[in-house]
Amino acid sequence: MTSIRAILPALVGALLASSVAAQDTPAPDEASDLANESGEALRQERQERIAEDEIVVTGRAQEASRAEIHRQARDVTPPGDIRETPLARYETPLCPGIIGLTVQAAVPMIDRIRTNAEVLGVRLAPDECNPNMVLVFADDGQALLSGMMEENPARFQYLTPVARQELRAPGPVRVWTDVQQATRDGMRVPRSRNLVNPPQVRMDMAHSHIYTTVRNEIDMVWVIIDREAARGLSLMQLADYATMRGLVQTEPQEDLAISSILGLFNEDGPWPDELTDFDRAYLTAVYDYIPNLPAFRKLGRVAEEVRRIEAAQLVMDGDEEAPRDQ
Image 1 (spheres, rainbow, N blue to C red):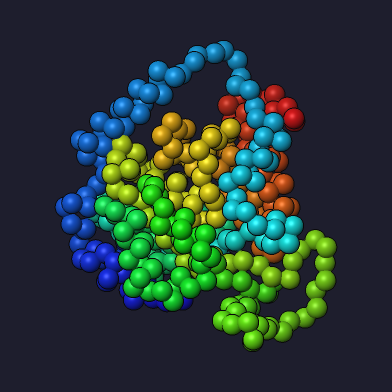
Image 2 (image 1 turned 135 degrees about the vertical axis):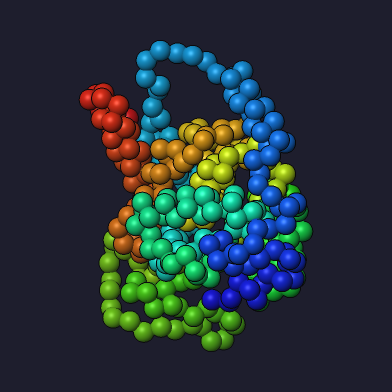
């Protein structure tokens, strides 16, 4: 893995590039805590908009059907051959880091991301580590990522033209995930550098209709958020959003039928306070079981996980009536 320190100098100037826990001094004042007066005003405005649209009803809210849950799970998953390709996830210890905030703001966010990962069974690197998931708050994320591509073209050489265009498109958030393919036993598969010498790797035979011979491992993630777009959002919301964009590969949609933290930067919401049942179910489905199951098998378990989470919540609330299966 290319060292994070080799990439940052030309991109973020004076901002430190180490893990938050290893920072001795806070970031500059202009990159201070998002919870300032401007942020509080925007947060209040969001809450007022939610209150205006709120309809009070009695009884239990209508549950999303299994078909609706499965459809949204497919929609937020990047397109691909879900019957032959496994979903990417971390197999190496996770080390989250934050750039562009004070240590006082970043530490609780790092703790939250680590807690979310620990619940999923993701291995965690020690506090003093070189980040492999970096959350960046930038004045201009579009310009920052364009600079990364120009200064370090080798790191982006395997991006498709469509992916490059998406990363450079206008918007409040940009996520770049570097995924490495490995055998089912964890041996890295070399990337193809030309059409003459295809990559080769030797391993024991393992023919199966249940799992694939390879798995996709997340090597590095950059979640770049425009600072202005983040104002008015809580640190927990931002940390949970980073979790849902960093620990798995997801693509936010404008119209979400089921509440998800992925709608945090949509103009009309939803703006949940934390990971929703759908989000936790999606994350659990990806990280449960072996990493080389085809994507369709894991996506097919999201609805089941949502029902399990709902049932557990009912028990905690003292309501023994289980959610109906639809």
